[in-house]
Image 1 (tube, helix red, strand yellow):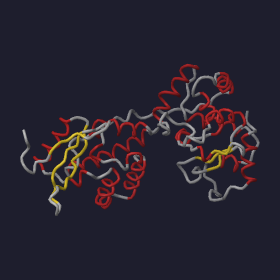
Image 2 (tube, helix red, strand yellow):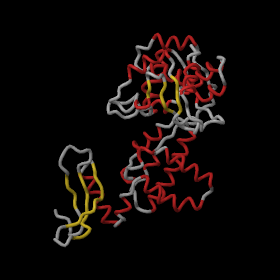
Image 3 (cartoon, helix red, strand yellow):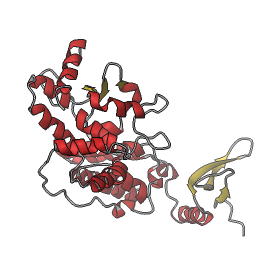
Image 4 (cartoon, helix red, strand yellow):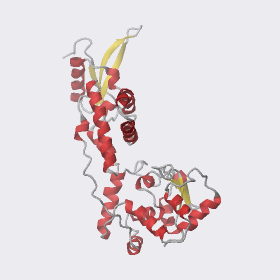
Length: 338
């Protein structure tokens, strides 16, 4: 049965596509008489495409609004909403927005629960996951009022429970030796790298091979604070072999999945960290690797400023440039620990 004139239609695109069906309507005609189409969306099944076509003809929603990306919707929403709230609230929204960087360019109407949940799960702290959900809630409310979405997928997001207060316990020398004795277990090398660099887990997961200087025994990494961002991190001699075994200039990241993408935090935590801790009979959080290095550095005789720079803590000279001498100081410092 043919659709009425002006109703639009559904067609299937050629090739192996995840969403091969397209729903479109005629928006006008060129001087030559050929039709000008506007796309309503791409769908996995013909039924979904037809349902969208029916929805459009029933509501006549603004098609251009439906094309807005996450970033464009945020910009449009924030321009209006930020005038009504205080500076602290605005800063909270901005921080949460940065956490959604991986989906900034995705069409907002195409986002589904599983995509949003992956972004949420990639964040370690409950407080940040909570602020991310708050941002999603207000953005989806805005999108719903403006007929940009047909379903509030934010309502299905889970952010887990608040972390119970945990006293950080560093890895003991015996546990570190046990890790070294079992470095044939896939992923154990990454735990030792975390311990001896003091890097935050997301810093290591996003470390680019182009920032690794093996011969000079340091790499450039870090984030989160001005002092920690793009800092020089010396490489302890004991982890050099582990880094060399993973180092491949063909890969953008030191640690990457089969597609060359950085490994998400939730995947590392669930598929690498937790199984290793269980197998080796250890009970530690990932952040305790960083705490372990800080504890070890407290036990050596070293300039406190050097230790702060090594860990990426704020100092009065955070704008100071690294020199050959200062890099050597960092390497000498890390070599003092076992």
